[in-house]
Length: 137
Image (tube, rainbow, N blue to C red; front, side, top):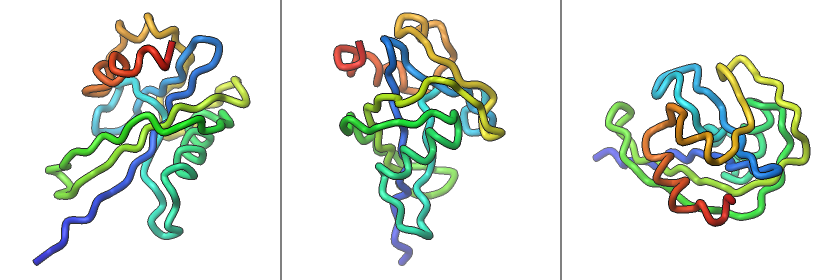
């Protein structure tokens, strides 16, 4: 019997001066949606979810961050990949603000929280923002 492994993903909620940093996804799933920067942990080096968050934010946006605390872990089953996935979401502060988008993403921008209601977001991200709005404001 095959054991169903859990794939770990990290995402950074980066707040600076009342704005949140979001990226526009270049690839499926959810191509052209806005979401926090993040990605999969590197299994080959047994990367921690914290190190993954810092690395992915830097790769995708060129922003250096410091993790303040873990906000949430979203768990779900990925039918396409036949595996469980956990998204570890961290509240972070930026040590820099100049965005340089890499070729993995279509765009990256700083948004006011009230602006993101009008964006095409990844599924369930609006619920996440509502749940954590007090911390993010």
